[in-house]
Image: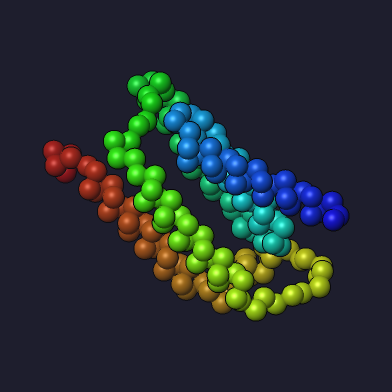
Amino acid sequence: MNISDIVFIIFAFVTVASAAVVVFSKSLIHSAFSLLFTLFGVAVLYVFLGADFLAATQILVYIGGILILLLFGVMLTHRLYNLNLTTERFQPVTGAIIALAVFFSLSLVALQTQWKIVENEELEPTTSKIGKAFLQEYLLPFEIASILLLVALIGAAMLVRRRTDI
């Protein structure tokens, strides 16, 4: 085992453990901060896969944008700060059966797949390739998606407005 294997194991453990805290914590604040560690761990695992663009996007969009917005929303809403979330329907047997079925099906697929084994290759940055593809080969679909998102944003703003504002 070399140092990269040890770092991978540490970050994989941190990611899974913090994801478990997100799911099982009764405190909304603890869940939100654990989500921070989960998303950062996923970004580090993207780096290990050689997907530098996805890692940067994970950090900028999810941690830098969505998670910080969620934390501000939770912390600035004083009524939710000491709220204990409990579920009226707690079905551990059904959840365990579904979780085991998903686990065994994924394990079966992982064990029966003929995985391509590659020697240690030198990883190269993918950001410039993705940028060139967006601005050359996929420019039209990229612009269509941006116009579609703009129309959805305008439509959402129109739905939220009151009738007296029109």
